[in-house]
Length: 196
Image (cartoon, rainbow, N blue to C red):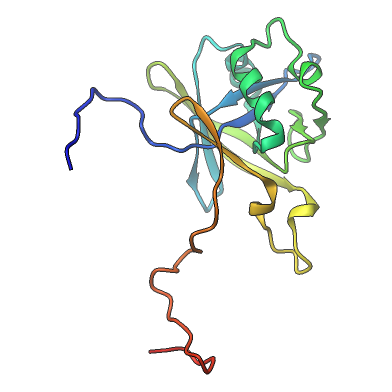
């Protein structure tokens, strides 16, 4: 297989294009779209987002030390794109996109009610890295739409119509190809017993 060799670049795709909500006390809430978002640690639960210092929300995040990561669905994709290209300096993004601020349980920044999952975060550290600064944050709480839970309370994110971002384009997530550990799981025999 022939390959081209390119200059260094961010090619870890696809990514979640999440809606990050934040608010200064006494001001209207704002939303920014973040594609550089990820899980950092399980215990304690930690995440990170990377934001350019020139973004309007950067100073809000820095001053308040808190934000909410709101997962993006097909129904929220237009809002994700809009909030990524419009500035909160002169635009009320909640109003423009007809989104509802949702009171958080652990912080003052609101979540987005229309998002199926809201992750409340408190900044632990800000790392200046170059074009972006990384906000390393503790997860303080998660709100999940009850429609995503089965009768036993298990979460089914596949019901949420989540979207992903890949090299400038948004995509719906595709079909399931397996669950964690499927490559080594023992197969059942026709009589219902597991093969060795």
